[in-house]
Image 1 (cartoon, rainbow, N blue to C red):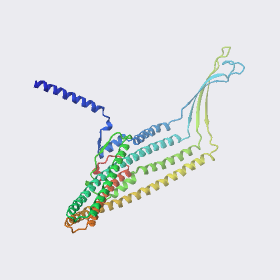
Image 2 (cartoon, helix red, strand yellow; image 1 turned 30 degrees about the vertical axis):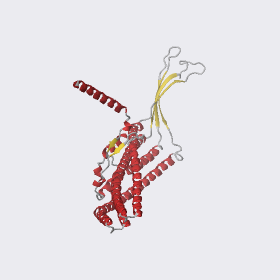
Image 3 (cartoon, rainbow, N blue to C red; image 1 turned 180 degrees about the vertical axis):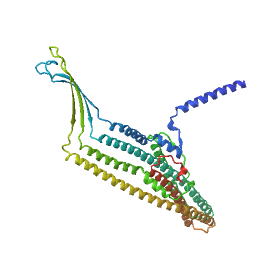
Image 4 (tube, helix red, strand yellow; image 1 turned 60 degrees about the horizontal axis):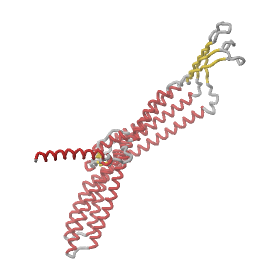
Length: 440
């Protein structure tokens, strides 16, 4: 009887497992949260982001275009009946009547095809730089979202710690109230302070959800079907390093936007050369063969062939070609001016980043080694004195507010440093996956 019951239980267990597996399979994948960390998010971005995919396809498009632009125009085949008499439709009555087949090929002026090929090659290189720019941009945007989320989660911890200090004060006030020494006004002030912190917590959590939605979007999940469980970057382990001057030289040499504008200058120069080539005539070479039938009397007539060359003459070059050449030269000057402006912009951005990183390094040292430890010691002493009725209530509240402020400032300093380093990699056009520890 016991063995039978065990057998029944085993069967029921197996059926339960099967049923649970079946139900689990029916649950939509969007209901299952997906944990994603800093590195895997970058990998997924490179694989799934629609804009990056579009840029990659555009690169392939321009690569195929190179051989197309360097090819000769399609030849022309001519089929016809030549010199048919009007009075009598016959192929052997008139001496000049015949059946003709011709082959014609257009040859552009010397240097035109090679110039078009160089332009197509430059357009291909431009597409590569454009893809690199957008890839680096989205990687930087993704990393920024992670840094913001990590900062907000750490800030929530600081707020909770602050609430604990306020709870201690509230307990002290309640204890004093039980003996008649407490102040109702002080209890209400503490409650208001805690309500302000609760309000800020609500705002922070909403912001975190928005950032997660932004991450889902740029990862290619535009409908937000997958609930993300973002694994935080540990900002507390980040050490602010000094700005490396050699990085500025790398940025100037490899920035995608500078490369794009440099290539555009070369394209404009080649386009001007192409317009100059149009001052010279194109030539179309043709060969035709005419077959003639025998006469009605049976006499053979010789077949004939013809060779010809046709030239187009740029008669209206003063009103068409010359202005077109001048237009391309003006466009080249515009591109050179934009290139110079972008170089100045990036140089200024690098100088600003260098100053900010030096400032953040000094502030981080000031907060972590001076202000925060001193505030912590002062706060502990004030709380002890407050229990005995020595310390003033509002002075203690101000100390708690200062502790919250400076801890937030230190955390914000580290976050901004991380974002700045990520921005430097964006300026460089770096499309590699960065380890979170690589921000140090």
